[in-house]
Length: 311
Ligand code: NAD
Ligand code: UDP
Image (cartoon, rainbow, N blue to C red; front, side, top):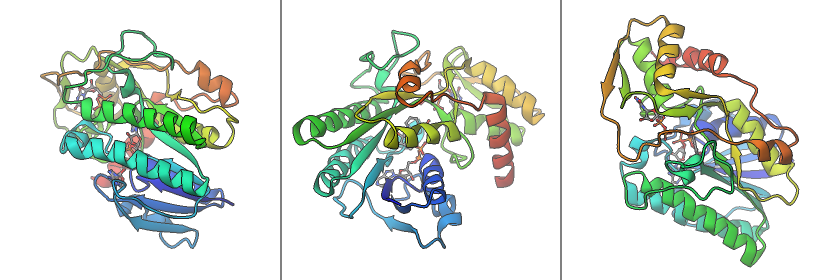
């Protein structure tokens, strides 16, 4: 049994990770400021004596004796991370410094939830880890992209300078139950719109692509990276390489929900990446053959069932 700190533990991905680690018998400290997460996401764990909830903002130092840290605290959807962009950068950068400082002091292993956004609007397709990316440093997505890039730099520097035991994963678009219904991300937006028979809002012409990973596949990859990757620090891509256009996703959601929604086209936000697909060869090699097992249709079925309970 290990004592494990999860920052951003009350968020979408964090709540699934808390659940998995509690089920494995560990002690979990879930730290969150509830900016985009909520207690409802971890309600099912609250009575468990091995589960502890802490209201805290990662831009301030935190101390606890722990064996492992998963650093997930950061708003992840464009409307939330653009709401207060300066705070988003502080969360990524000061949060990384504070958590790396903690890992250094207590000798904990620390994993950073980085993102495919470090590749920006990629000029190489699919994206392998050695690709340095194509990121606009002064655009509306930069607070998130550059904040996450700087966090990766900090992780590597704490590792090289102080020998901190680090792991970096680059998460590609992940979806599933407990996504925030109003966070503006494409899967939650389309499902909520379809279930309410409201127009499905496609930004641009819907020809941009994304590759959607079901949350359970990500959690499996994260836990393997933390525990079964030896000296490998990453970064490593974790995503589902099956790529869809946004229009295809809209049509699939309409079909699966039996919705009467029509498609409505809206302007494309600036710096919206045109294509995205992870190269997951490295993850397969380093994480004992890890690969996604839940395809879009099955993942959507489970996610639609969750959103139905909210309506
Ligand atoms: P989320 O918004 O549901 O979760 C983020 C959590 O962090 C929330 O509970 C929020 O309240 C908390 N938080 C935000 N700022 C904080 C702060 N300053 N101090 C403490 N807590 C804070 O998003 P998610 O999809 O679960 O994403 C989790 C992590 O994974 C994020 O770091 C995100 O960048 C990364 N990621 C997610 C995706 C994805 O597709 N979901 C893709 C790439 C990377
Ligand atoms: N998108 C869309 N309609 C929506 C929400 C998003 O067409 O209602 C598009 C968005 O422009 C982007 C893609 O879907 O091209 C994925 O958006 P999301 O915010 O989910 O993730 P990210 O852009 O960060 O990959």
